[in-house]
Length: 362
Image (cartoon, rainbow, N blue to C red):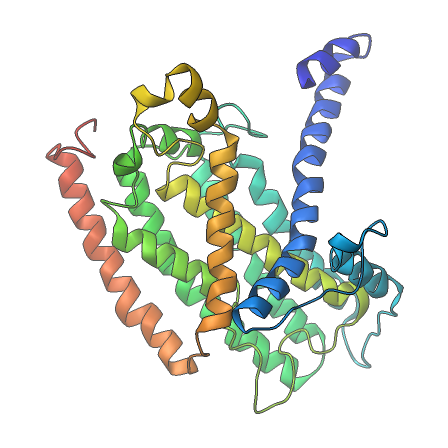
């Protein structure tokens, strides 16, 4: 479709057509993503409600259809937040106070530029995609620190310091987990990493890199400040954390960034450890006429895997109690970090010695 549209615009200069096609691809990715972010808030409230034997949102309908009760809740929330006043505290740095939510949200959206949805379905297929992901996901901590400092509030600043220390700690474990994937696949390109897992569910990296897979996903939960790692909310302070002084859409942008990061971590877990768009069936079954059409490789597998890991985020929040701060930091530094280092060494040895079945291709 995009190629056909580009042909229709051939009367325009080539650079203009290129820019328009890039903008179109960005909209095709960002608009559905923002819709998913909005309705993830509804899914979370419904899932946790059912887990705790409650109903959840069921009043705001969509298009007046009674069987869609609750589906209009994200839209109602968005309208309410857009009409609320953005209050800037006395003594706050106005520019940084307003820039912080944007700094928190922008990396979560920009990281999707290199995520492969299936085959050639990606915005840009760069060879250093893994480095790009690492660089952008590292920027989210700046939004939190700026928000806490620019608010001119001791409570917001304390919450920002707790969150920043936690994010930096678990970012190291996440980085080492990705080094294990890089070692096994021999490439920084996310598409090549998926192709290196081709075969069946037993060829995906979750099996040989199981400790790294587990550490990566748990660290992702901690990176997004989700329960049971939501220590930015100080219970003794009766405040929300680094965004306590925010209201209206400025407040909403922090939550959009949180949910966008949740979807991103879920998608990257699917790509790096669970074969991305690859089918769990053996390759020869995917080539059969009927089975190949229904259960062969495709974007539907990527969406299904991402949705499963996103459900795990919600499941954790409804299940686990919050950890103490010292327990969280000890887990990151004294448990996850040593395990990742040991497993990187073992993975490197397996690749060098061509140990089958996973690394025989290296």
